[in-house]
Length: 310
Ligand code: CP
Image (tube, rainbow, N blue to C red; front, side, top):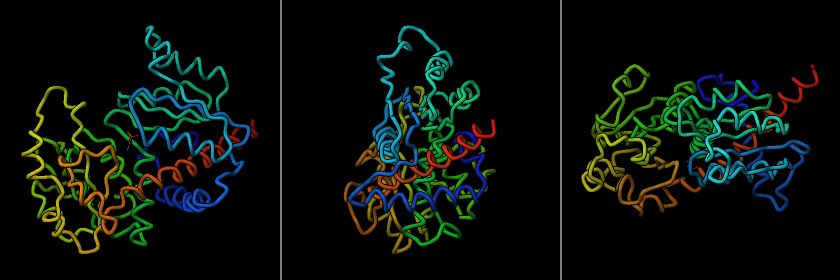
């Protein structure tokens, strides 16, 4: 494929290919010399129309570790502020011949639209509530390394499912790899059609976490709640925040995940988040660099082939 727009378009074999290559980039990133020239001569532009710490930093590091020329567009200081549209901005940058365009945008579908207008490879770094494919891939790599496999696992995704592109991409990926996915959260934060997604739905943490191998917590995405139902943080923590008592319902060796940014004392107890025997939150961040290196390497290979075939 030319682009990485979502997990929806990926075949399980393609998912495994990204993860296998990412494994080798974990080794490179842990080595004394964190550099390869796989993307030498290529230009990568990062366009983030929404705030980011992990995704932007890891895409930048990933490009640099592979030898690409990386440019971070400061979108707050761009001509978007003067009324230029997303598409005109993309066409302007495309005229400068980038090879890889990494885009985060608050509107679902904006990255797909942009990909139709440019001649380079586009990577979706999160679009609205739609998809965050590299997040799901890095979560999958973290699970595979911790559990030794990525199939037939019981995985609970907990909290604000309704506003989460992370949940959507993870549901798609974990389902394709034949895992049993449960969604756990208040009914107001679980989409009404969720039962048709091949998942089980629970509104009770004790029942939802029973026998789980993986517990994935999500942030309350208040910025996407459009003034609708916003639960009280205290009440929410009481019923849905992950603490030792609720985690005790999962398997004894269950791992705890969170994509970040994390709100301690809202969706997760800080002690659980910091418990290195249970929490793999820092591993997720580490895997983020490796997965983005792998994704860009594979897309660059496709781009080179496409160009050499005329
Ligand atoms: N998980 C994630 O996308 O984090 P950032 O918003 O910090 O990139």
